[in-house]
Image: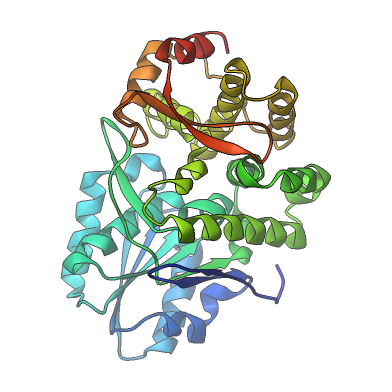
Length: 365
């Protein structure tokens, strides 16, 4: 998708770099720069691995001809982000004989990145992980910031660790094989950055919507770089989500509840659920007198232009969704906590939101 490489630096206690551009999975020198030891485990899924794993492993072999390289492949989809799959990844590290200077290369979307990163966080109390996101959603969100996790029946991402990657290499060539639905899911997270901190970015997205949907290389690279820069800045200021980083969860409290209640992989995917969740968060903000309804309608229109759902899926019980939100990892002791907004680009944390108001919103949406 183009020869130029964009770079975003993530500061903090464990700084790292995000490289964005084409051809990165074959760049043996760049890959080798982030691989300290002599063992590598490539973690991927059964949709991505057939396309890219061989080329990646060949590049790794060129970087370190004497190294041992193994592969762990999981079934694609959120339903694989389980304790059983995690155990399989740990077994693969054990079979490899991975030492403390080994590296996990997470080749895939958010599910692969979350699970592989968590395995790297746990093996010998933490080994390196290089994130190689192959979906737009993973490039702009889950690969950046070091949040790793798996799902358990009680909820999404409840078992995890903060484990910053050693590097992120976002090879935009992989987006050529991305299904249209997955591209749209990633655009939901791109829109989120405009919603929470950058209202002019929403203007840019409205102006460039057609180019993004047509997978124009320059437009996608710009959207990825701007999104990563916003996330990198927030993560650097709040690496462990004690404050400002929670803003990145705009739409996620609603969205995660929908995903869990539908059954992971059975209904909306993550980006679609976040799109619905952002509209709900904007409408709740309007009902609480925080923002003008025009902002919520504008957000809804932009998401719909990107082909994303903006209404609650039918058949979900509002009270069951509220119960899910109580267990959400963003909940605190004084009741439901949401990321709401005062209008476009001005999100904030609101604690102690009345459950009855949330249930009423869900019942009437």
